[in-house]
Length: 472
Ligand SMILES: [Fe+2]
Ligand SMILES: [Fe+2]
Image (tube, rainbow, N blue to C red; front, side):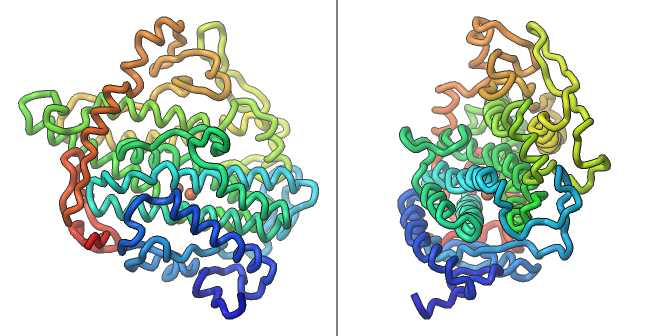
């Protein structure tokens, strides 16, 4: 394929124009990616102009260039964060050794698995969200949805770059397989459960971007510590984009809470549903569901894999460099949940096998910050109610708590108690049908669906009523 201007077609800072082998691999893969995008990417709107940001370089001017683009023409690029000269490995058995510019032979299989597992989540979320365009609450929200979709597409590219550039033939096969597994597919599902769940409505989507994308932030942040330098640099750049996805989730749910409070204050009744809004009890159930499903993504409390990834220098802790300990953790301990009959207690266990739990703890603290901000909104409206995160043992399918039923306030329940109460804690079919009934598209400039407040400001300095997607 002589004559392709690679920096034009595929913006990059990985020297693509000089890497023939990588060019060839991507030339084979790119048309398959585009087929996947047309088949399983956003339904409708592919011909429309969308006001999107594209990364054309990693510096301050280049990483977010805004313009109208048709999604299939989006320039998915390959970017690594700037190299840190003289970077050394920050933890594990290789602590202090120079970071690896290439895959260490003995860790090849493990690293490939880590990259594939991360890569698999990126296209999965695009598949989960593909029908949402039809029921958008505004052009502003529609644009944000598509921004996230194209960037998750780019995150897939980021992982495919690593596979193609560093893992030879196995890597190319894995790159193909990333387009062959599909969210919810019975025969070839995505690797992780949360990525096979449905994202049927915009409330679920906002919860997903708040809770499930946030798992992504923590996974990426710990891979950004990796001794394998290309992985570290790839993840560091992905994190800059991920911040926007989390922003969409946090402000999106905040706007729903805001609108709910307005409806409560305006009306003489507590029945927000009669006024076409989302009542706080329903929001709480959706929080319970998405939070618990996302907690599972961190894996078991006690995990030899987690210990190995760390000692091998492949996956660090969240903000490893800021921690003031020996970064080897051979003698350290960490408190982990434990079941003592029907009581939940904690126990100190060796720090290495508890690294999943530690990352989950960091995640939980981060989740709580957004919930606090939502509660501020409720308080400002002088409404006496609080949203809260359920206990970590609630509705879990992986790890210690998979064996028991736990209430949102952390009591171990009998099956009968659980069955009698679960409709109060998790969305029921009636709740889902109600949420679905609210999902009527609003596509007039500057207008918003009744169940969500407008955002405080528009995108990239544009007004809220900007034509974020040109439908004509
Ligand atoms: Fe992503
Ligand atoms: Fe994301």
